[in-house]
Image (cartoon, rainbow, N blue to C red; front, side, top):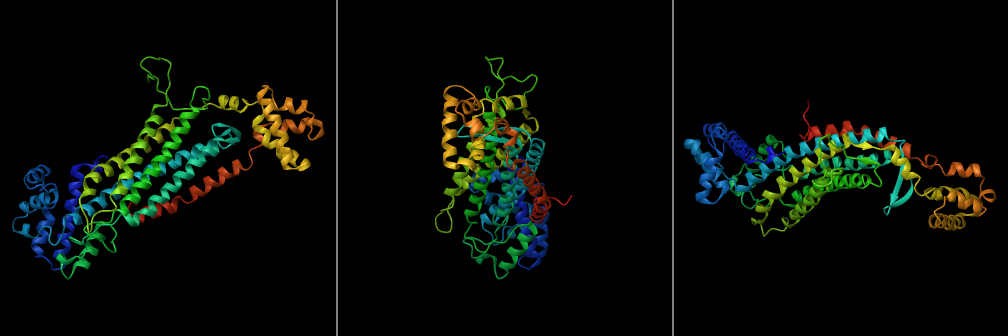
Length: 448
């Protein structure tokens, strides 16, 4: 991902735009064919050097014009036809779309790998019963299969979002200074369509001097959504790794050090890093919103921030995705601690199950109040819910002791958890070929 956003890579893509425009203009007779061929041959980093562009830029103070001059220098007489009819952002925005396309290919690959890891964990742990928590408190039983499958489903939606946004963001422009294509001549429409088709990009309906930044902001916000899901997964692992909970744990290396002063520390440092990076990505993405309202046909206020936020968001997100995949592949799960936590409330977590059973005899509202009182008493007196229900005469009158024993078993109160997990896994996996097909059509996934 870093390579995609290096200066040399950006230069290669900008030169590719200049090359493709010259080739099309030569074929259409807009510029001399022999000049077009020479520009096409020289528009690459074997001829145009980054240090020469920077040298020119120091004198003229314009980065794209510096590139144009450096290319013209190596094209001899054909140099007069370099950048013919173009404005700077025909090159910048079109090259940017190529960088984004390459970056999204990497992000999509990361997401699909993360989805696979989560689905495997969901399938493996679909019958591992654990306590569900709401408001940070024990609620009713669920499974680790449900947890992992929930995350997989969310990641799957991100895959769909990336594919959905591509037609709006993978777009270039060859429209000139204010979008009218005036300088490009009578064949302007054909030039743009042929250039963008060859570059594998979409054609915009209309532009000003630039592609409108609602396109880019939408993508940045979608990338921020992905980072927030990583935050959610990482934070869940961090909370479940608390010493007093310890149901799961990041893999910890044999020689890894947790603290400079506390030798026994085993901290979830990778998940903490992912959480911190996600906060950064969120705030970087917010900047893209401020780049939408530019003056008139454009001003330059978007340029400086975009040179920061685009590479930073893509690089940080790619890093976070790869780190999350590593964490999940090496995640330790402690079934004995999961079982211990299920028993912490001494049966109170099963109050809903008992309530639903006896509500068939006395009605839901009376059953709720009866179990609420029994649960509060069990909590305050540090007794088991079973003891309280027996003491209050509920067992025998409304329910048998054998029925109560069955109702107090967490594994007997999972509803359709297993089926939900299996159905969700099958649905996501069943859509994979369609996802890959769409990715190939967009040029994000190779045919290999």
